[in-house]
Image (cartoon, rainbow, N blue to C red; front, side):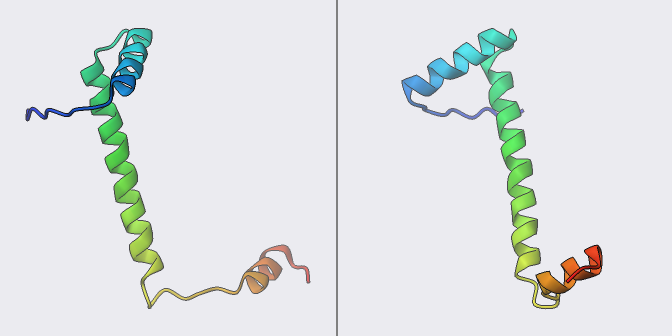
Amino acid sequence: MAQITVLVPDELAASLDAAAASEHRHRTDLIRQALEQYLEEYDDHTVAVERLQDPSDPVLDWNAVRNELLGSD
């Protein structure tokens, strides 16, 4: 495993310690979990942006879609 050193504000460290104590876990475990979640969300965001910028992806008219789904005008 790689070791990373990070400086954080005292208030953030205190919040981290309180959360770790509350969950009976080490602060390292909470930091690792937070990084994993952040990177998963970052990957999801990257894919979403790529799809939004895809010129071959058709833009749908909301009213047409709504009418097709609901069968109303």
